[in-house]
Amino acid sequence: MRIDAHVHLIECLTSFSAHGEGRSLGDGRVELATGEVRRIIPEQLHSDCFTAEAGLSLMDSFGIDMGVVLQGGFYGFQNSYVMQSARRYPDRYYPVGALDPFCGRSGKILDHLVGDLGFRALKFEISENFGISGYHAGYRVDGPEMLPVYERAHEMGMTVVFDVGGVHQGSYQIEGLACMVRRFSNIRFVICHLLCPVSPDQDGWEQDMRRLMADNAWFEISSLPSFIGEDPPYTASAEYVQRALRLVGAGRLIWGSDAPMALNSHNYGDLLGYLQHAIPEGAIDDVLGGNAVIAYDMPKRRLP
Image 1 (cartoon, rainbow, N blue to C red):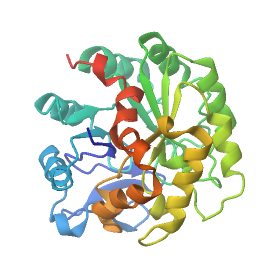
Image 2 (image 1 turned 90 degrees about the horizontal axis):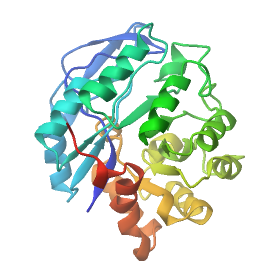
Image 3 (image 1 turned 45 degrees about the vertical axis):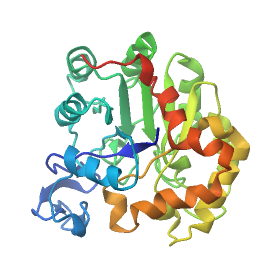
Image 4 (image 1 turned 180 degrees about the vertical axis):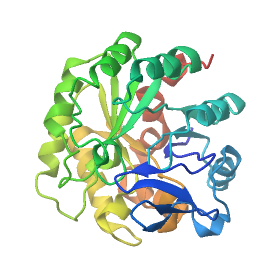
């Protein structure tokens, strides 16, 4: 089974981030509160959304069997639509919920997501540019606002996903996250983008990866060429994948595309294809699917 473990479905753009709110311009672009206009949906899709059906069409074109649907505030939380899509296509989408832990009724939101809607995985986009740290300056990955989430996820054996942003951002809280990985051993942690390396040889990257290594932690590969800023054949990205293989092993890596926004700069086939050369033949099936099944405990999860 081939799984794209980093897909975003967007029913309607309701962006909020460090740039303030985003007003949809109707063609895949948003006008941010700073006055900046940013394209989110690739122009070639001719749409101001990225529906479940659009995602299926994209994945079908490249032989991808399933998508893990992640969320982030820059697109607008889409919890109801994500779960609706997963129920409509239960063999094609695995739903991951999202919430802002600073909300005054975050406990009630968590109860609704987990108890009513049935999410068994949650994602926290905490990067300064696009996530929670950008509009909650005091956010800590190990802070009091997060503890109810960890406790609920630990009790239920859930998966919790983090995008910590780049090394120069305040959201890059490796030690705090490592403490949570060790403390809540019944949670499966997935860390996005191989920690978002921003140069071909980022100082301290291997050390940070080692600090997060654990039996309950997986590392997801998506958008490396975007962070590094390279075009095909993605030589530096391939080197990071190979270094990660040596550090954590093939059983701890998960592939994702970060569609649709990543497709503004890169071709889906290229984002998939370079891994065929970077990863040994004996490990490719695990990275492109098998490991996601384990990290998200898919065989045991059934939607209510």
